[in-house]
Length: 217
Image 1 (cartoon, rainbow, N blue to C red):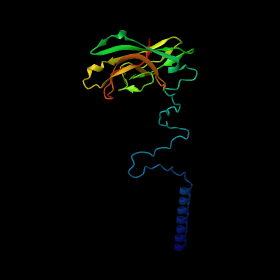
Image 2 (image 1 turned 180 degrees about the vertical axis):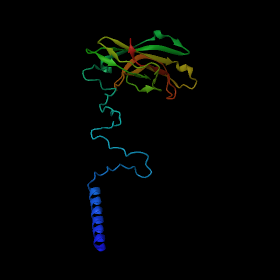
Image 3 (image 1 turned 30 degrees about the horizontal axis):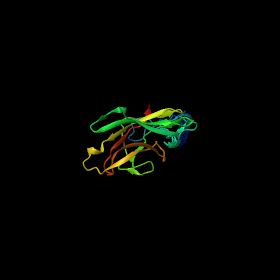
Image 4 (image 1 turned 45 degrees about the vertical axis):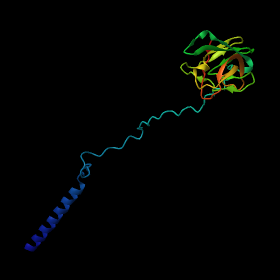
């Protein structure tokens, strides 16, 4: 009889344990908390939104590849440069003189039938005659005044300041006679001869002439 009670007690204990196990399995599970990795200080950063965009670095626009026309190439439709074949030359010495120098205006007049442009500096030197080679050093440029685009209609004149320093100012001057000035208009390989007898230095190291840029007369 005692053995039967012990057996029944064991059966009931086993049944109770099984029931408890079933209740534990059927109870609602707890949600798992997101943990911070060891050493972290806060929740993990959420990924960026798929449609989020970042600003691209700003880069300067590349420079234009279009070049500017050369100084001897007028823009399409613009008047051509004035050339020696369509010009006459003269000087006006009303500028006076100082310290052994004479200041004059070098005037180039458009004798052609179309407008033309003078822009820049003429090439000027003293010459033995109309067909002769230059004597001494050519004129240096006076760049204290900026060049201007001088549009010459037929009959109009552009002027540049020309300074002549007396040859006698230089003790080492190898003095010779010059018949006048050889003048190359800007960007031209042809020249004009202006008869105006004067004294020159054949020394290439002595510069007697200075020329400024053309301006409207």
